Length: 457
Image (cartoon, rainbow, N blue to C red; front, side, top):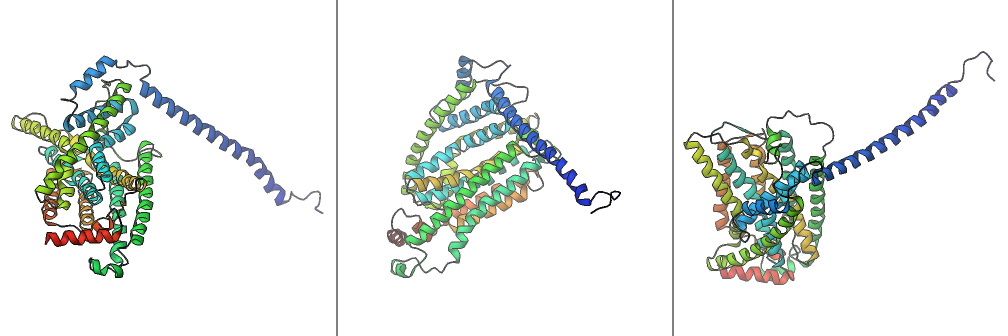
């Protein structure tokens, strides 16, 4: 028993502060939950106020329709439909905010290529679909930004990119490319014999069970890619903490093309209806495009690889290409008549964002859509196509590593695209991949591939 004059026991001293701190911790956690709930409600309220333009003058129906009609040439061709997509996306940015507005613009700019890919999937042109996916990605990675860097850098030394988005794009782009390298490395590591019908019994790789394995593998990778893309958009929409990177003009470049003080020209509901109608018209136009160019492949004896890698993506991008040519001519006029310098906005490299979305969102979406519609589309791509993607990814990441571009780097990107087009013209395709993508038993796929090779020779 302790003496009356002795100090309190250590256990009694340590227990009192612990007991006193529990209500404080509980109260602090409760306050944080209340604050998080209030922040979410405030964010939703701000979004709705922006979408409905509370406190601001809204745009009428008549004014909206007039602005839509005069923003394009007509409604039944790809070029004006692309223009309507751009115009509608820019208008919705006023109602959705910068991050969601940019996502909508990127998605609408990919609408033509995505619609074309879905049509090829439904028509069971799986090998052509894979080549088209790679063709769309390298078009947006090399030709389009390279041309923009040439045009925008004609009269200035460097164009700046926002370092924050450049670093994230490099990571996402590399993940998308490496996701195709994994199935190809798995397939290449297996013991494979010659692709002939008599070797079918000794060919463990080219079998129905092997194809099912690659389909399951591809669907799992597709889900992961979708999660990565969604998380990256969440990060861009609500990054944790303040941005500690210095703005070197990139923040202005990554924003919408409208000025901050400008207002919308179209009512938000009219704009949504216009976009839905335009997407429907675009689907019909893209299907007509596929049917129109199909005789060109058959009568012109164009190899399927070049047809998918170069021709189809280039035709689907014809609308934006025409717009780019118009801007190029305008810059030439300004150059010869000593007009204002081309703006740095040409270096914002939105085309690279299109490639990232196509690889991390649309490509896995096509794989899952093929699963739902019984099309054996997998992420097992042709080795030549994967090599192209790796080379394009390396060049783009190297060019944008310092967050600056110039016309010489743009010329290098365009030159590499031309090299790819030259090689693809002669490349016959990998027969093993064609057999694995055959919509039917593998034995019939091998017979179809071998008979096609025999006829070719």
